[in-house]
Length: 335
Image 1: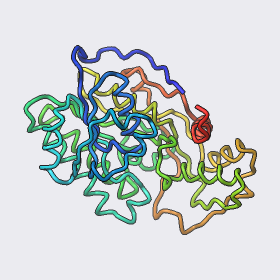
Image 2 (image 1 turned 180 degrees about the vertical axis):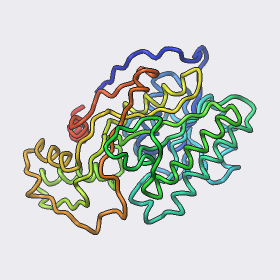
Image 3 (image 1 turned 30 degrees about the vertical axis):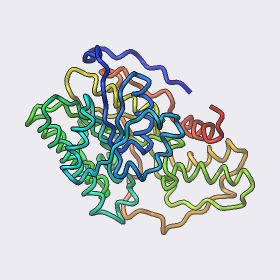
């Protein structure tokens, strides 16, 4: 499944082979980003907490495991961060590391805030102290916006975080903003709305839905248990979103961008479409468990990604319920 996007104009020179350090390379976005950068001729370094002990299953699924130079890095340890940058000597850094589950952040708030905020601070400090200009991409989150009362969120929308994860991401966003202004760093944040793929961990609700629906279709006889189904999100396709990350670092000046499809639909619609595509009625196989409800949750989010289209030449091709179909197709190995 190929995504064709407009040519990016105004990017900085690529006359030499570039090198990139991806922090959090074993995750969904890190693995797709590694694949993308390798296809563009980059020398790609990937950082993980334990490079020797990690399985890097996503890199192996994408067939790029042997092409990425892997190093260990603990984001909360400044020396570890600085040494990883010194060893890889990158032109670009993509900081995607940190605890990434909203639900888990309610169970582990301190760990979430420490991994996201201190990790981002250490990366900014290391880039500031390094003896060459490094372009830094920081992975932000639409969760920072909270409930926008039905209004599409863009780069000017105030933050109103509703979870420990969102609080951490909002803090990290302002750190990046501060270091960019105070020290003239090329550092920017991609405020990404939800984006999915078969590389999502099973603990994420979209992957839970897809995996369980497929097993039920195969005759497992199990039941899918979910929390709130009345929430609505702007779900996109992860392989397209990593292209936006790369495009952000090719601009002449660093800017923050909202990255989203512009289309929102409910989790119930997601579930219904997944089961319908497999020839099933979701109401026969799904139950709701109030113990899975989060202490606070955003009911609906909407996005305005017009700035990304205008300045990056980026727009989502896979959107709406097509995201559900894409996850089902790739899960089946049909692409």
